[in-house]
Image (cartoon, rainbow, N blue to C red; front, side, top):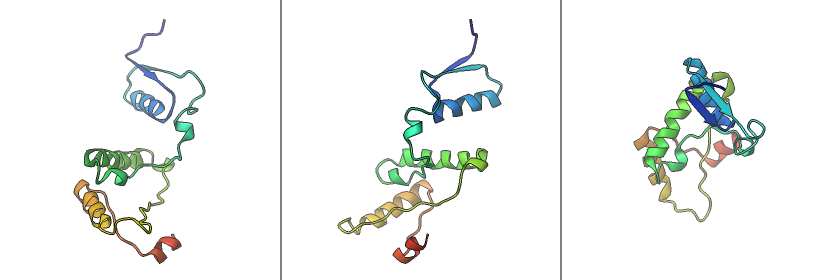
Length: 124
């Protein structure tokens, strides 16, 4: 019989990240996975680290949590995170007023955001 303090169910990014954190803290744990590691939702993701900007207007608490976790992961997983930036693009038909609402939402939760020209965006 295995004796442990924590059981982690699921060997995706979250489960493996929790297991790593517990190991670094010396906390006994057991990770169980029904299939291959990273074969579920983690294996189907785009591999992007979320900025929180997506929620800046609709869910500021979640936006701030995403951004804070983003900073932590960039610090502890420096070699695993490539800084690529990100774009939120206004398309024809989108509300022109939303840009200011979005920028204000980002500012209120501390997410850096700036307006750039379409030419600069294409150069990225």
